[in-house]
Amino acid sequence: MILSCKEVTRLVSQDMDRRLPFGRRVALRVHFAICQGCTNFSRQMAFLRKAVNQLGSKTP
Amino acid sequence: MNDDFRSRVERERAYLLRYASLQLRDAHAAEDAVQETLVAALAGEAGFQGRSNLRTWLTGILKHKIMDSLRRSLRESTLLPDEADAAEFERLFDARGHWIDAPGAWADPDAALEQSRFFAALEACLARLPQKIAQAFMMREHLGLETGEICKELAITPTHCWVLLYRARMALRECLDKEWFGNK
Image 1 (spheres, rainbow over the protein chains, first blue to last red):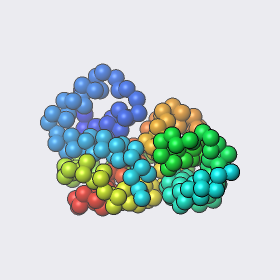
Image 2: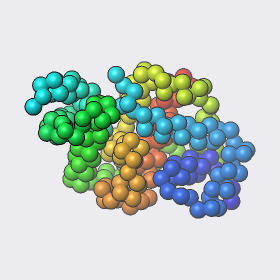
Image 3: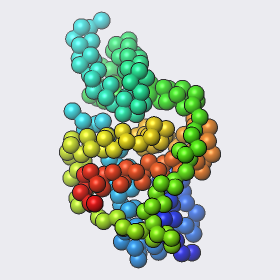
Image 4: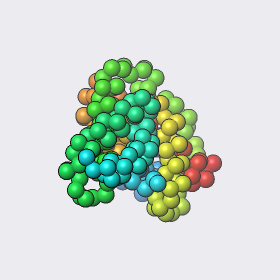
């Protein structure tokens, strides 16, 4: 299954909220291996989660 | 009542108010949630007893008050049709679904987490989100609710729920990219 970058952004977001079916997870990995933009996107999503989680605890 | 405890709790009011406003996006609701928190804290002084830090303890109480308030406000409102689709992000992709301008790497993002200016930028980005999207996102990412619970509170389908969270994440990524990581 070949994913477009647009589909990847949606799946990366969904993956943060539910367990994706095995086939989708494999398709994501395959896509990341060849797409730096989506790899960056995925790391940024993980970072966003971490940052929002810490919101409030680091403010004066 | 221990006056020293009361004044220490009062000193946290401004912080708590800012924290509540960020998630509730409604000055009156935030004021109410903080007031309820302070009352509960003063009544439950014995529950504190130097466990953890005072601010952490108060924030823990406030989170519950925020949840109650969000539940009430979400139950009373209906989702606008344009809040349930992600068409605004179509512009990032070409007809085949490829990035028109692919995301560049963020330089040392973890260093940002040490800077209060970064959190101010993140708050400003959150403030730009439409209210319901911001509320759903904070319920998921900050208060840690499961998507199923959020859908139930919002009385929408899981698909719509994912769209709300997707929109929040896309918008926040774009905003931080521009405002903090300096990619144009």
